[in-house]
Image (cartoon, one colour):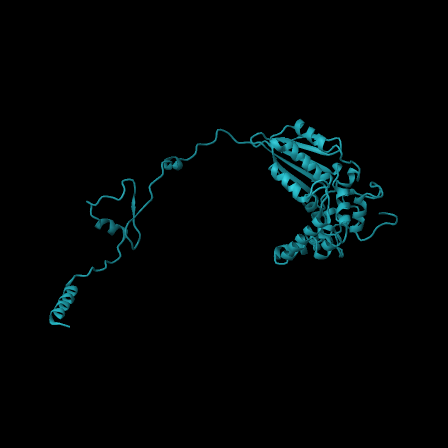
Length: 363
């Protein structure tokens, strides 16, 4: 390295060492920071307020929105006490015996129809747990004149939502549709209720889905605990004491004949309530339902079979193998007795089979 280069390097080092480095200032309080701020510096924005943190430079709040004064105002008191008046539906009855409840709501052009059957899990025979839900899943899987894909295509064309399910005491088929699609949608609903196909291929597909759901339930502690609680509360021979959705064994044992028998026994007009709400009048919807259900059958159990009271669980001082009320273990649940029910009524045969015994000569 030459002498001029060495001299230049030394001069650069000396210049760097002689340069004054900035010294860190100690943390100051907000008051001190604001006091040391030059008064001549303009604020960042004319409408913002400066705020500071404990160890940082001043921060500025966001600019207020135009509706900030309105939001800061306290609402004035109401002129009077509000009262809620529940809508009272108009009740009609179809020629086939089904009750119809109509609530007119003309705000939007949408109509909702719920067909509620007064039998659900409580209609399942012993050893067929999961049958009610199986039937509810199958009634929307095609009819005698429409396959599953054809039915789905027609529902999509009408922008109609169709679903079904089953609970402890009810089975339900629900439909939501536009007002302009109501006639066609009711036609499809009636076909689903009156003519389900129960094709073996569809039955096997739904069975696999239900078995997969039961396998997934094994990973849900809450669902397993609910099944155990129901078994202790109602007893192992009562439908409500069975695992929700059945077991893999009971689901595998359900046949197409079981599905048809359950639907024919309980999906009846004299066991149904049709609830309608939306942009429709009572006369209009009753006329459409009457045309669609003209081929429906009224035969079946007497109405006394369906009026079952909700069981009341009371403590008992005597030990029992079942903790369900005596009325649930005796086979005369909710007043459905041998004297009031003719031989052959599914209500009688199922309640007796729930108790684990059946009188001689009964079916």
